[in-house]
Length: 298
Image 1 (tube, rainbow, N blue to C red):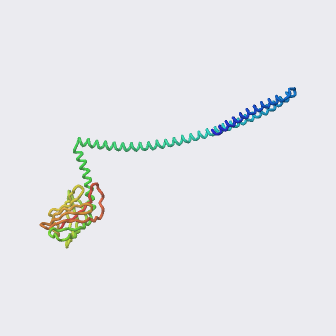
Image 2 (cartoon, rainbow, N blue to C red):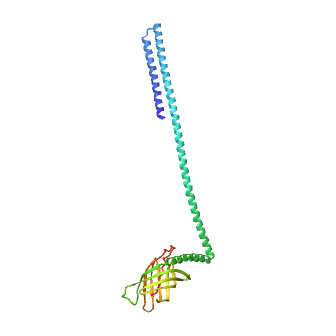
Image 3 (cartoon, helix red, strand yellow):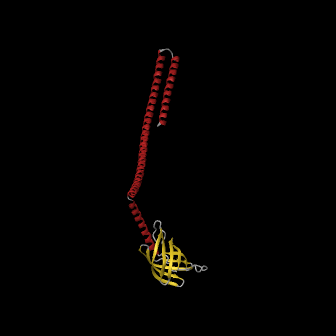
């Protein structure tokens, strides 16, 4: 639009200059005619006629210039109106896009704020619950003790369930040493378990097949299983095992392996160790060691 206005101004200025030039030329012409014309009446009439002719030409030129200027002004006005409409449309589109972007930003901010509010609410509830539990414990220490005992009982129950699941049907394959035969290499032994179940307290029943050397007996055994935190330990104290002998032993079960000591009286004793081949995997329990049993009976 600005280029059209500049063109219009240049055209108008050109027309004005042409008009001024025509007037000056006309004056020079009149002067020349007057100076050269006879002073007779016929000369004056001729000069007047010539003046009127040039005046008519000048008026015609002026009218043409005015028409051209009007046309240029109208064209410039139309172009200015069209440019203004385009500018308004562009501004409206930009405003719409800006409003849409603002809505998206506000929606995102609202979602984040809502999420943060939910998290803060959950955290506040947890803190309030902890504070309430702490207040209850301060007012009633037995309540805290009972709650901890209940939690520990549930955890231990899960450990024992996993122990029974792991050991039932498992095979303990390993070796044992003898103190009374210090130069002898470790000898192979094998314990094949049937069902392993909790009886009561720290007593467990093991359906066991014991194999080592020439010994191969199958016998149900009721053994003590004590726990060192999450680790089960099978304990025998001078226990008579039919067809095998009387033994004392401590066997720790950890990470699908077993290790411990056995004692058959006097110098008859040694170490025992090996791996546990489970019939079924045990489920993971927090702070739990894989449970395994070993039938001492050497």
